[in-house]
Image 1 (cartoon, helix red, strand yellow):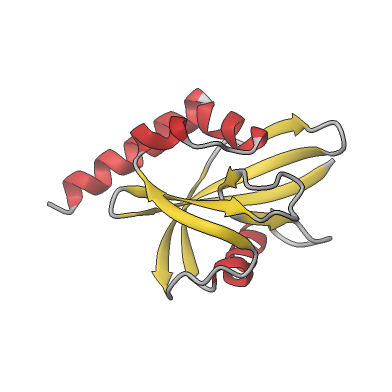
Image 2: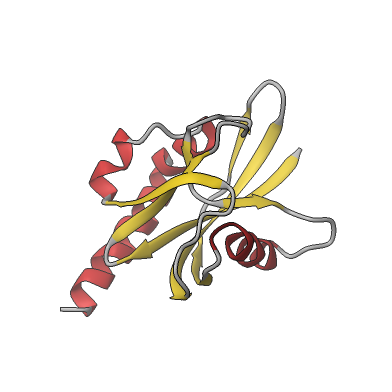
Length: 141
């Protein structure tokens, strides 16, 4: 099984989603950015490396979220999510077509790759995200 990390990056109470390119395994679908875990790599190191490579930003990991397993038929993955924030940098797309910041309420309208959809629909992950967004909103104002 392929282990893949992803970052659910929050900024100003919105969540970053990125659109896959035409040559990706799931062309033009949206995802939470991230990538494959290298041999002997820690999952936390993987997600910070992948985000730096893909988006050229530095992230801070706020919390681990609940992983999901998904069988695409041609590959079987474990998607390992982290709730993150942007520490520094400006987004530059190195592998994606597009990106956008969306509210939690609008996530259901996004045409996600199946594993990412499963991940965000998981009740435990919804609760983690809602709690973080609520705390963030009330701490900043």
